[in-house]
Length: 470
Image (cartoon, rainbow, N blue to C red; front, side, top):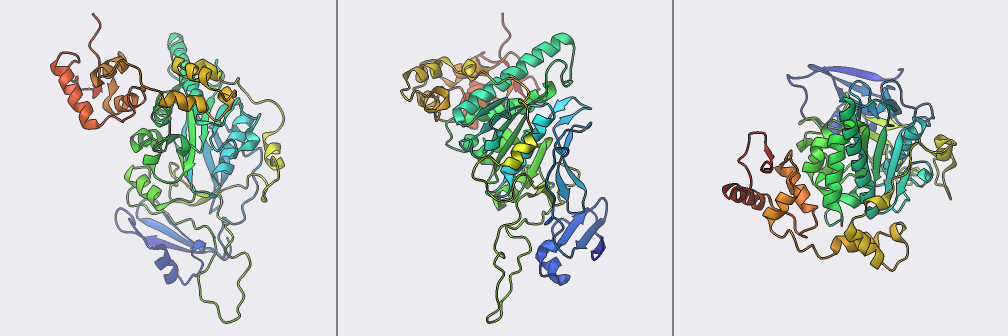
């Protein structure tokens, strides 16, 4: 590319663990920090490129062809700064796995437009989508009628997740009888995704259904992928502990598709400590305003009218790709200016026709306790309302039995057993207590149960198992 300065650097063994981007720009005498791109390669080499303007400022609009899954299960969402395509995997044909995905970004970073692109890709690729838009349906309104299931409340999202887990379990049993260990699209089932936008509303501390939501999402991430039932969440980039607890998501996301748009410092620290970004790796910050130069203006010198306009929407890092520290940007999705109604450009991307798949029968997954709350509800709106019935069920008095922690453990443990972290999540979701179980309390109770002969001794697998049936 003409007018691009390129410097190849020799790095110390192990590479550069930390660098000061502002100092690098000052050394190169570049006032606009966004024009300088630092990328570390394999071995002891790094490249610094100085562009005449930020190369990601003129990305093109997305096309329907971009959003059709290729033979390797990928769609093209955008481009890297060097023009290489930014791809997002929806299916791995080599392993037969659906994917686990997460999109993080602060308000206004372009998260909802990226979700729209994924939804369009799913419809155009024959993938069944069950969507929870927890911003009362406002984040991706054009998805109305374009997905198999669309819900807008937290309670409906829980019912949707219960349905997805039930479908995964049905497929596991059916495939076991067929002698199949992997998933093949359309034989006999379609590739299916649960997508939750604004997932932080469902998983943050204090949310009514936090514990159950975390358990269901983890179950889909752990077992659903091998039977073609994937899960993708989109959330504010705050802190992973606000998303159901870091233990819930850490393992799920490490091998999934993780995209980080403009972020907060707390999120960055958590991503590094949780191993989602290699320790010591540095990401160039994504500013709200790209190209803004902070300098003193002379007397009567005019500032540009648009110098404080946010223009970095869609800039991101694909943390689980082969280029986790290379900045990229999504193609433009939809109209540049806000529309008074549904965005016609986005509707055109979805195209005509009905979406693949059948909707989940939400009422099938309402518990008896919740049915009673629905019957007692006087809002007359049922599941279409603001989940008042679900809130009533969640805050209702816990059942009389089982009361002790030991009884609750025995009621929960499946024949194959559970790990201690999974057991803690299940206990928090069993509805028998409003207080979370502490790790120390659980360990003490397990030790007592073993001494009383209620549980066998640890078998070396790290799982807590019940006594075998007589």
